[in-house]
Length: 345
Image (tube, rainbow, N blue to C red; front, side):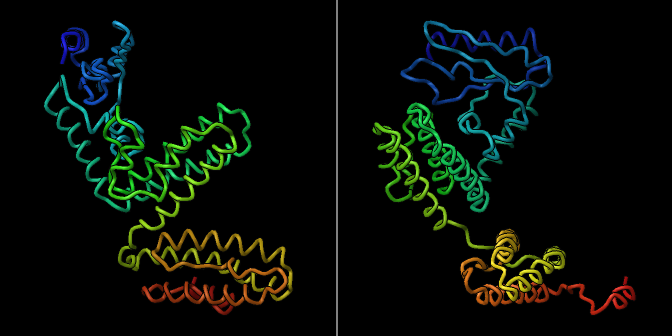
């Protein structure tokens, strides 16, 4: 810690003690943010306000060419960081508390930090977070396909590489812990990574045309998707019977779609059958994930010229859904007539 850093830290602590003693919970430095020994992030990086008034401590300034930003990070944002919903994870993992209002504030902060590390050990949680980053990259890619300005394409490709790099780190149960180190190098240091990933990232940096950038973005997404699929956590034990009561409710609503799909298949109406099959396939994907069911491929057999395989596949999947519900001890509410329903209502 150089002389400038020591003086700035002392200034910030004294200002809090004299002007905001009850309004600021913590003053925090972040190790590893310094670039070429400039001390940035080491004298202080942010503070945790305890009141609205505490946010008034916030300010930015430049000393000898080095910018400093004393900014507020609320408890809520700190919790989002632990949940990997805030990009600057190192602001929590690499944090060094320089000042605290009370021991309780320190303990609250440390518990949030422990939550971060518990999350990192949760494979299902990290897998979901990786998919979120993958979705962000894919959404940006869709926009990128309609862009022509070179600088916008380069920026989009850069962000796609960043989102996917974070997804790869999450699938390895970690995050980028060295703010001043190349993400590509940090990806290469991971135990596992997608095939060709680092090379594609470096090619993005070297690319000269928009078409190159678009092609590389596709390659990055494709290899990351395959990597994520290979690292999907094994499903847990079957859900409790109480959960399958919800699946029964879902089926009791969706059985009309099955009935309608059979009708249009028998009628040979490929347009209406396709609409209902798409709707049903979407629903099957959702409940399949929620209830730990096997893969349910309905649309794979769709043929506009021959709807019989679609009808047969839909019947097969319906029987499977019913067997899963009843196999977990849940009774489907089915009646042969209105009178029978009314006698039980």
